[in-house]
Picture (cartoon, rainbow, N blue to C red):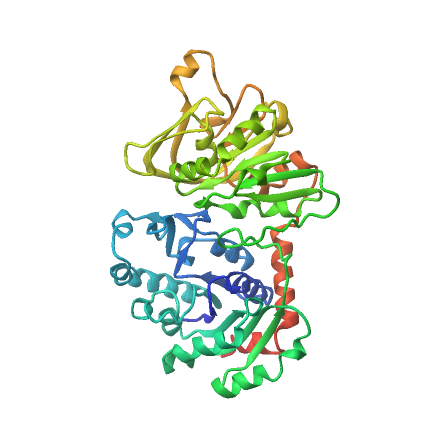
Length: 483
């Protein structure tokens, strides 16, 4: 194995592992090294299409930061939550029904050989592999069946950084407690502690870092300031409700934040469009005053529709559309906008739709996972600016959507504005549904809709690398990959 392995562990979920891994990928790539990211197991409904299937969005972005082609070996196991007690399991890019129905601990034994093989193959082909852990390595109830944290670190003999979110409080206790709960051979792999999201004067932390080093032998190698606007999409959940755009607000976009929202990272560019205010809507009041309402993708469309109705959001969306307000549905959101969801295979569930488009969706056992390049036809009303615009994105869906036969026979026909059933518009022109994810990441679409651009991912990746190069102790990043 030729690659040096650097691993980013966290004391908790949300400590900052994903963005730090991304920053390290770009830092080492800028040194002229061949770099690949790796995360053995990711739990997220944010996924991207790659050769061979799908991987977590975080590893997709990390690969781009490493200037590498994203591929399934970089995230061999992806868990996509469908309910609080159930996840769809994606192994090496493909859905595995057998693993999806298997108990958690039994699954670990089954998948470890493929995880190890994927990591070993990346180590053979690269100079550096930057590995991301999951949650905390000190979950002692899961330690025996671990396949994503210290088992990976030991297998790769990775040099590990342990990150804690100091903004949450208790960071030194988190770092010490995590270290103390690990076996001695695993502790030995931890090369440095990182304090993330610090506000204020770093000199006020003394003498705690030295006291922690006296207890553990591990130095604190970086204190990273709070940084709200780094531009990298959040890996999971809607953590950041803040508006980021500059200038006076001239357009408010409310994105419905369903419990099983998927691919929410595709809305990151909207936070950076001048004059745009982005709101995550969980109640009708959140939609008040919105210019657009967006129904995003969902990993459980029928269940999210039920939640939406419970919250009264169905009435808010219908009222907004009736007044001529713009509505956009993406993938699962498109399916919700139709008349009905029909599920004869037990994929998602049957449900009545919102009735804003005369469409019906049937769920198929076969999952569509592909990159798509297409061109909008002629659109009307609120979405007319997209007419003739070429767009690139990706599809991840079980549903297949078509005109509602009875409604079409009666003259209520949706306008097909993207070929092959990928996009539909109502007669009035204010309601649009598309299967294409990633619209707002396409510069042509962004310019057509807003006359503006957002920072490119390349700019974001370089900014992340600049940040860690400024705030890590001198020489630490080089020492992590030294022979």
